[in-house]
Image 1 (cartoon, rainbow, N blue to C red):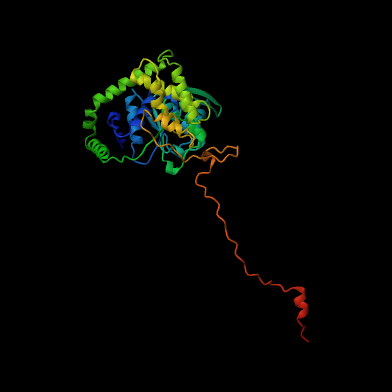
Image 2 (cartoon, one colour):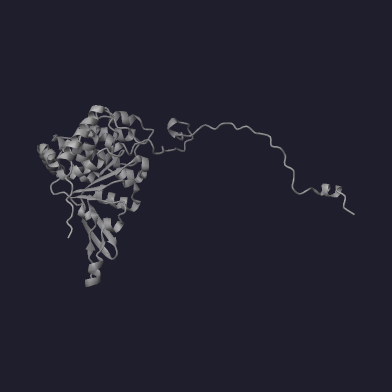
Length: 362
């Protein structure tokens, strides 16, 4: 009889260093899961998976569910329980990964490699907090309130703009280039690998403080009348979204909810324009048009700048104006090509005149 291997203990969230934008985005999504989740872009080895696992431990009794790349739509949303149907001739719902992740963290590595159908179902459930299944003769609805964390390496492709826009927040990680900071991160990881329980004991107090702060902030966000905001907050949100040339109004709504989550996390009495500025980059990073550079400098006035993703093609307007933003990025100007004279070809079949000129043999 074989025994299952014990699950590895997660790295403490409070001990993660070098990624302040990642920490803030994950905490805001945990305060208000209705934001739509966090998309993390970055190279390998930048603590994406470590941070997601550590976040789940801060939530009381929260499961950590991983969606594999080979998962089917039925395993994600749930389907008909064939065993019950064959045995008792009754229709019964078999829950999927969305039901298991309720109240916890649903982690998807390399989410850009998933089929669009699975991503649509993920984002629908993350935004609404419920999963609705209408298939195989089953009509079922269950709670699916979880923190969606998706990671991707931009070198392996990106998501369609329609799917990018439905993610609430986006963080773009970079390699740590400061030598002292790299050494501190490596030392902490080595100390954890040698003695995980001893390392976690050193950060137990900080972890308990973060968990208590999350419980308090989540309770504040639930209140409809909590954290009021004035016209200055609306004006700040509108100005940033207009400058970034975002499509639709989802960015405005997510930015207001993110600012509210940040105010609740910090225990503020009201939402201010400063809260808006500090969450703006995570809201606009994956929605900003490449030619909208003014919003990047405006939103970076308070928080540290994050390099926007400029790989998405800019909008090409039909005005016919030759603006810098309307040019095709990477296009080369046409160069004149010389015309060379080609030696005339001799026909393989002789002409009729030539045939008449050749005397016939006697």
